[in-house]
Image (cartoon, rainbow, N blue to C red; front, side):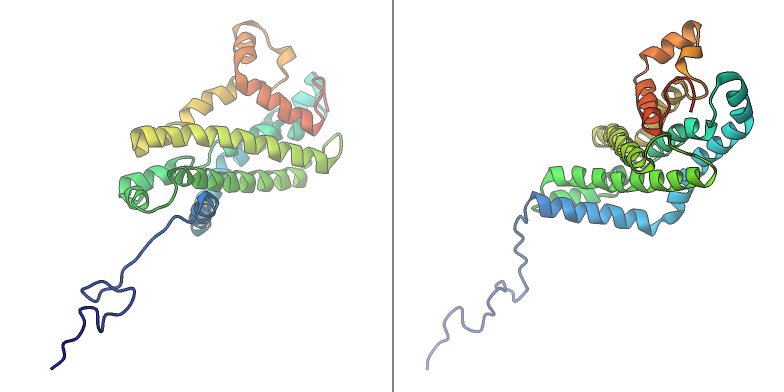
Length: 249
């Protein structure tokens, strides 16, 4: 009577218990980043209401500022197109309204980050992918606000194409910087509240800029505060791309 070999009947690729074995191997940093970025973008697209809500406040302030100060700015400040003057403020406001590290901190709080950490995925891809997802959101906000601005009378003094591309590039850089701060807070604290509160850092800085009138018309302590605020130079760089030269449009 013959005896079967110990491995007879065992299906290749299955363990001794007959259960399938999953052998995961690293796919490479680029593949990991693409996968995490795709997940982040899908998360944004699945919740379009968040995209709309993030645009409400920037659009509201944009319209109110133009309605309240448009005529005064033209008559007293020499700004012939106040909508163009205000557009960068609204776009930067929207860029700072992105979820930043919120998606990441929710993964941490929900335990999904720990599950991903057990996979062969590069740890850096988990951060970079979420950052690229934020860039997608910032680009979406900026394009919508640009189109809205054109619809209500924003006009570039130079080439609209060059100005639009330059403004979008600058806004993306700003959005990356702001989202990086938010993601850093998420990784350091793992707290949803702490991560969401990073917007408080940006909010006062935006209003300590030449948001309502040119810097050369400011005086006293406010002018000094505006001059040392790094956000001032982001705002002025954005306006220069639209053709603002300091005296009018």
